[in-house]
Image (cartoon, rainbow, N blue to C red):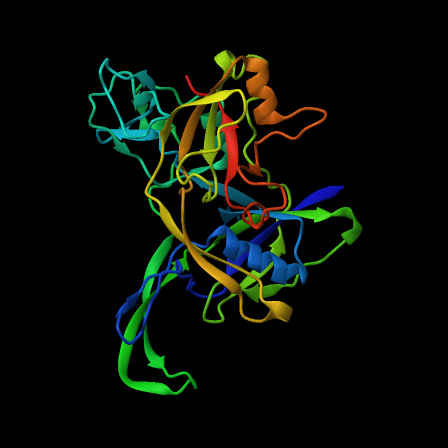
Length: 358
């Protein structure tokens, strides 16, 4: 048996988290920082508890209120687009014109919006949890609507902060003249990262450490238990998933065996997808006794915010896959696409939320 605990990590300083691509301070002059990946947050969770939980599902961006409550935010789904300056629409599958071909093979439809003129651009930004619930329920429709009716954060709550460094030799002495610039990220006041931690019951009551290393260069983050945090609820109406239609929103970067293609569930077909640019992610296995990590590898991940439209044979089958039942868990709010014990799954790559599409 297991139980879930949510942890919130508030950076105490700027963040320096690299994407894993090779950087030589003597040959390159700029090192760029990126948002923390699932492996970063999983490492912080392990440090907070002093041991590895069953699974970590994150990271999620979140804002802390004055009363100490955390509100999760999610990257705006890739199928929600800006139409002009003040209107938005949610794209929906459209049959390809006769004779159209693509190099994707498995996709038979493209995405469009009723009332648009074909000049849409990704809206970008972030949606708070309650707006994501509306999205999953299909309340953000394919028709063009005023953007002002949707709570939306236009920009990332982080600024790039340049830091100048001096390259060092193998024995850690300075290399004269080898200056470089490293870009750090600094979150705005009140912002942090969330992670759902799946713990075994035999752990009993555990208290996380109050502060852990978060990312590189010895940067630290405060740790606290985040009560009352949940993934946005999936549609619960009995009429949901009509026609066997399930929209799969990618909440954390996904590393799937076939690259951008989501592993298609048995009995379903992939109708279409809205996928952003691939993100470089470095992964590694823990070293012995806390030593240097082993098996470092650079991979390319499906970015958070990507959306896949699946079609099952009927609503009951779609609902069972998305939400689960008495004998099997559903995909909603879990890391999808890898075997249960796979480290990419237990670290939180590919957490998905399920909803509907029209």
